[in-house]
Length: 458
Ligand code: ARG
Image (cartoon, rainbow, N blue to C red; front, side):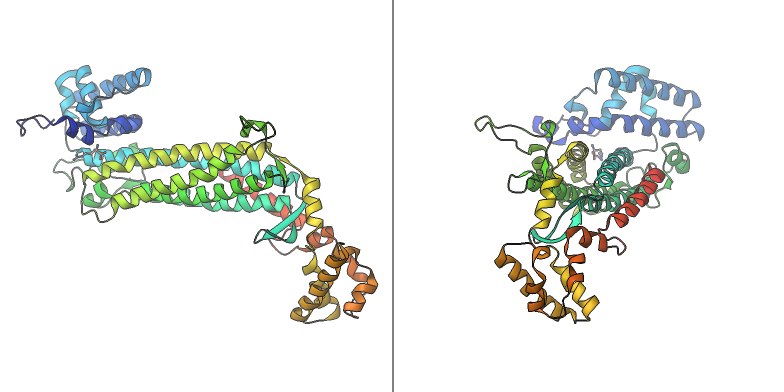
């Protein structure tokens, strides 16, 4: 492509370090779409003959059909998807192919292709997340009344419902989706026409190419256009946050599936056995979702470090933008699909959850709150009185609700029989009706909100 200036060909290792075709071939659809839009514009503006534009567009269609059928040929000598496609085009239509690169550089071309690819990736993630949210909402509705221990510090804290717990993950994913949506709006500007870095002297119509490719508008600064990879970083940062959320849910499934907890039985389809211990059922899929969060964060870090300190405008370092993004996207797709499958099919051991919620004095706060409400005891003092009641229950080896009234009144004379109304886990859960609280009617109201939102956005 630059034979005019160079007397010698590249060293073999130069070819190898320089080539991006082994990975950027994944962008062939976007590369063809960008070239079709560019050729259409070149013809419409009279920058090239209309007949040449038609021939180029027709040839690009043939190249695309070849790629679809046989895959993209990897030839390191041709360096990248842009050069491979142009070479294939020349094989189809001859010298006219050489007119396609008028008023364009690979710098604005790659920036455009990559944006188109990331935009599709964002849409894919959003669809996947909507599916996972729907799975969570469905299971949450089934278990809106099911009581389990709520934890802080992984210590039994207050009873909550399983539906409430699952809906917490729905909320995380709602924020994740808004990050991806936000990124999509910000990235939807077209760099094509920025050319190498300074714009072009040809009378290009950047608005036409932008709109043909589904962008909202052309970008406003040619230097920024070819050197900006914020859109890829936006994706990777949102992906990192999302993968952290998925790793937390995965971790809960792993803990819950352990024998001491026994809250869930993970489906066979998402577990593995042991080659030596016949009783084993390992939560491998959940463990890999937990682990992949580390790799996704690594991809994000990789591109941050590549971009850090790069001067304007394009530098070849930026070719390294694609492998981490592709890797993160592939991993994320697997994680979302695996989590969705697990959420849909996991068996919840609700009897076990209830039994554990009954133990651990999880209604101690309800006793303290009752003293505040009914006996007008200051909360700090109520906390202290309740601590003594917990100690008495612990010593007697019974639940708070099973302490005889005599024991309670001996601790504080202001306690009376009515207190038993708040000491059961059912009463505790039902009482937490503040907005966003764990009471089943609150959880159902939030599920209804979620269903309305999911219906409206997907
Ligand atoms: N393969 C290159 C990349 O991925 C395309 C742009 C090359 N531009 C250049 N002037 N060498 O970034």
